[in-house]
Image (cartoon, rainbow, N blue to C red; front, top):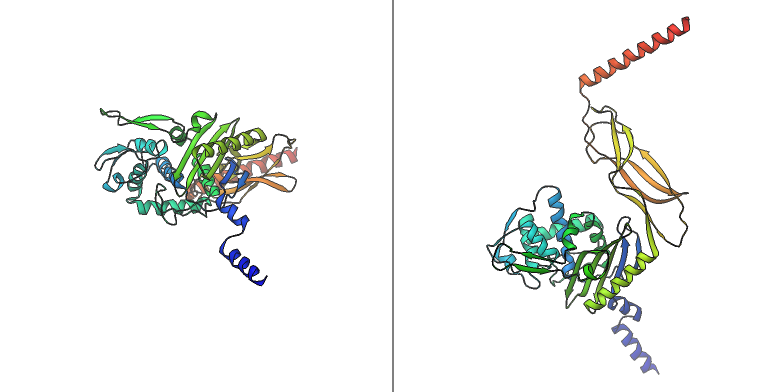
Length: 389
């Protein structure tokens, strides 16, 4: 009997508990509503896995942000390096010395998942893939994707290159804020090198954009180590869902799970919008400003996700404005807006300045003071006349 007990104890130290083993082996899944970030369902969403080509969502995010801040243009030409041309796996077969526009390289990334295209764009933006990877990791941390570590730009297998379903959803949620990116991710087929006698046909690796109504992105992923993964964006009835599956055994199983999750999400939930990002909330007085009144606008949209079966109850908007004086920077936080139901805060957004306000000049202070003094004297005169009568 003692020998049997000893054997059982040894075995139990060699193998993990069944619950832990199931957590590691089962697929990771999550679905969230894009506007609010509300998680609608999840399973093993914080288990670290290799994200494979879903890595390219962060690459695309940094590209589109560079486009929007005007440090990059869609028509900029990129000269392909030996390093970029040497990438294996999925590719658009770039050749060293070839020149291609940023727009065409983005097509190669978003549609065909080109590993070579991601490295070419990394080198264009940061000078080297290594420097670009540093940018990727910094941006991930800023977004709250704290379980993600990128080692390369494209998701090719590399020790320590990991993420989670939750982090992929967070990155996807940020990516869809840049609506222009959806023009690329929702394209099923396109062509590169159309000016040559050998145009290159691009076919989207995400078949759901053709088979599931409302799907317009975002990125598939597959390696033998990572298995099959996907991050999907789908819009229906003014509600956008971000859905992630990682570690599926096949593309068919991956897509089946996504479709089932989206069916449940769209059938069960709805989103109630209250306020759009950049919408005017209140006018605000600025002390000592060259301009005395500015608009306080919402930094983020405000909305609430609820089950369709639940009775809807309106929320109350509470606005708090700070006491601020010039100078004011454009985009500076100048207040807070909260949605409350009773004492519960449902959602909130900072209120920001929609313009820059410089400090008033001496002459502006003088003329304002003189105007107030003159106005005060006139009012006093009126009051005196009224009293005499």
